[in-house]
Amino acid sequence: MPRIGPAIARVGNDAAVLEEKPCPPSSPRFPEGRFRRRRAKAAILMAACNESIGRFGKTPPMEARNRAMRFFNTAGPVNPEDHYCIPPLERFDLEEVLALVRMKKYFVLHAPRQTGKTSALLALCDLLNRQGYACVYTTVETARTARDDVEEAMRTVLAGLGSQVRSTLGDEFLAMEWSRILAEFGPSEALREALKRWSEVSPKPLVLLIDEIDTLQGDPLLSTLQQLRGGYPMRPGAFPQCVVLCGLRDVRDYRIRSTSSPFNIVAESLRLGDFTQEETLALLGQHTAETGQAFTDDARETIWTQTLGQPWLVNALAYETCFRRKAGRDRSRAVSADDIAEAREALIVRRVTHLDQLADKLREDRVRRVVEPMLSGADEHAFSNRDVEYVRDLGLIARDKPVRIANPIYAEVLPRELGWVLQETLDLNTTWYVDADDSLNLDRLMEAFQDFFRRHSEHWKNRFMYEEAWPQILLQAYLHRVVNGGGRIEREYGLGRGRVDLLIAWPRGGRMREYVVECKVVRAGDGLESTVRDGVEQTAGYMARCAAEAGHLVVIDRREGRSWEEKVFHRQQRSKGSVQVEVWGM
Image (cartoon, rainbow, N blue to C red; front, top):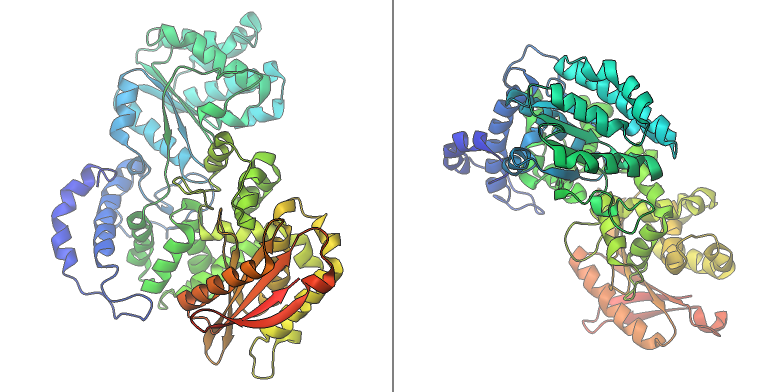
């Protein structure tokens, strides 16, 4: 496990012992032994966390009980005294980073929001200062309000840097000199000259870690990068030996009123990844070790499969479950998969800041070009490689191929956000579609949607910013408005699928009853009957995979010149395997 570092090596011999420990009783969904190896790796990682947390946070190992109760962190850098955490220096290839510093390289560390970038930089700063460098962490985020005012931006950047140098190193030089340098050299040369003079008087080689670099825009960003590039040949005697730029985007996207990158001296562009499954389990294990509250196998699996290790989501689900919700604060009660599902829904409904910021990006054209064909299941798309790189840097889509939404929670948030206005304004009552035995009458609900689509689709299609995906968004918003009153909807969509699959889970008789709804669109050149035939087979296949008790196929005809009398129908059709599917045309 190359990412884990030396602490793992010292406890690696424990793996054989851990492998022999019995697992809890199996469940139908999670067979016995499924987590045996992962638990062993997670336990080894926890041992490394105990040791590394002491080094990083200057606190005793995890076994010490003379500190306040720790919790899952969802805001700002981690503090090991307060937060459960994976040691930041274990989350990237530290050996590579230290080699780049020694070789006097300038490089980029980037990652989506709230993945641990700042925590990693602060930990790296502490380590480098212990290794004989003069290293300073600074953020330029406060200069974003300067917009295109280079002088104001540079004043803010230099003031912040001077303050950080004083507090981190006890060095007063920059704090005393930056204003005189700015007055003498002007904003286009002040940063370069300040770093030059500071390097010349520093007894140690300088390393500068600049966070939130891409919050600068336009001329201030261009000037900052050009001044760093201008001083690069003078390193290390008269300029910082190493500069690390940290932000949301890779340096390739720093194109400001220029046809090429203004910072072409970058040696490497490193990306901070999500948690591995072992790291996710280790984080949860810290809570269990300190409080005694366990997570069931189902709960651990649900956290992993819903987040795929996105650090903020992992922490937010666990915090919502174990600290915010009253039932979860009972440490004698194990956390279940149902608890995690309820926490997930609460985060989405509250539109918490992380998810709201993500949804706000949907308004950008280059994001729309990537996301829209996934929502509609289209085979064709108009996005470029640059579009994909940008959306991947935002964390919206997975890092590997094929192009797909990064995790199931994001996949749930996107269509909900796009259909939010409709969900909030529809006058629907869940009880209208619930029978006396508390079962969901899906036939009645689909019949109501068919009538709604015929009456109002022309009005609503012009209100959705994602014009090619509006039928799928409309269907999901309508169903969600009703089903969310007692059940839940799970969604599957993606490029080239030619359909959107919905799984409706509704509680009745002490268990969840599941129903499949699939949506397909007939476009110019498509045949209605061939589309229905393919859709019936796909719906039957999805029903078998989910063990659903009923399936519905929605076929939306978008061909020109078709009347509503031709488009609207309801019939039953069987698959080749004799599975009955309700087919709704509209």
